Each structure stands twice: as C-alpha cells, then as structure tokens.
Length: 262
Figure 1 (tube, one colour):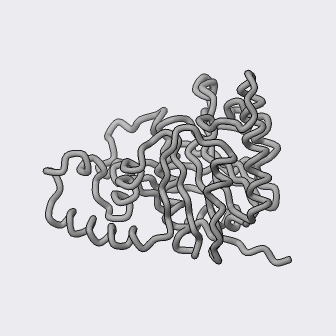
Figure 2 (cartoon, helix red, strand yellow):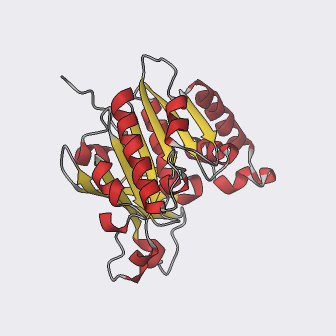
Figure 3 (cartoon, helix red, strand yellow):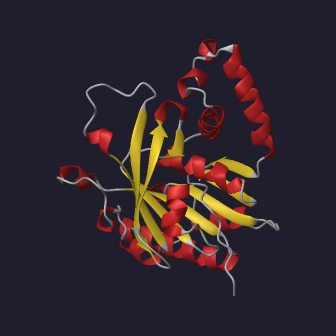
C-alpha cells in the first residue's frame, strides 16, 4: 500500500526524514530551554497546512500560553508583548488580528490537561474525519500510565507502547516531546543521544523516529547577543526506522517563537 507522506513544512527536516507517515510514533527530545515546545507549535501550524487535523495536548503549559506563542510566531510579534499589552503597537495589533482570523480557520485544537493517559488520547481521537489526524503531546514524562505501578520507568514504557499501538490502530501520526537527562550537561559534547532519554528504554524501541533539538548558544553564549535573539538549532535525527538519520538545521527566533529553515 502507498503510504501518504506528510511534509513537516521544514525543508531541511523533510530532506532528512522525508516527512511523517501515518501510524508513526515520533519522539522529539531536548533539555529545557532548547525550544522544543516552540518547535512543536511551529510543526502543528505547518501540519494544518497539509490538510491534517492537529490536536496539541499540553501537560504543562496553559492553553492561553500555547495560543499566544502560536500567534506570536504566526504574526512575527514579540511574545513578551502579549503579557505587557501596552507595548503592542498598532501594527502589532493589526498583525495579530489577521492571524487570529487565520488561527480560527486552522484545524488545530489546543488542550491543556494535567493528567493525560494514553486512554485520554484515545478518547480525543474518537471523532471521524477525512483528514489525517496528528496528535502532538508536550511531554511524555508528564503523562500518566493507564497501568499504575510504582516503577516510573515501567510506566513510561507502557505509555510509549500504548501510544505506538494507538498510532497504528487509528492511522494517526503521534508526535511526543520528551525530556532529556541532565547528565548530558556533564559531557564535552552536549548533543543528546538516545540513551539520554529520561526513563526511556521503551521509547527507543517503540518510536519510529527519534530526534533531538540542540542549541549550542545555550551552552556557549555569544559575546554579543544576536539582535533578533536568533539561535541556530540542530535537529538531530538519531533513529529513523524507515529512512536516513542526520541533522537538520534551523534558525530559531526566540522572541517570536519562530523556527525557520537556515
């Protein structure tokens, strides 16, 4: 059977992995502050343009914050201005209003829920649609298992296995963000590897694609900060069951939460 490939909307990433495929479990791991939530929000926006129905499940950040980050990135308006509304210029406001109209037409649901289990995700996906379903979860270590044990490692393994089964059964694309262990910071080369995934032997087995985000300027700040708070971010594809591994590069404009192809 011909599998439809869903482009990520990032040229460098599509050149590496081809795109996402239905039934896939994708994991994107990173240390805090690397931009993984922003990256996931940008992906969500890109995937709605590929005729996907996207559900963004946030276990940590409120819906309003996620929406503001999305609008900041779509409008190219500094995220901090959403908190200090007085700082918004008329031009900013026009840009945001235009993007709010676009956002309301996008097939994107943002759900913030603290205790998300695989069964919760299954219920979210119950509706029928002709579109390709994509679920993005931020992030797996905050999820709860449907099977209670006292061993967190086993719980994460059960969650990742359930998510993989769910992707297969529903033909969905599931993208899960994951925290990376602090031990990375002790190494000379701080780029994460698969063994750095927190509590995550199961993740390595179940995932079709595992990528890591790495921002060198987080560890080695430039003497003169970039005026646009631009960082180079590497997306290191460490595992790809059906294709190539490699590194895609982006420019991350932190103030507006926007990732761009280099």
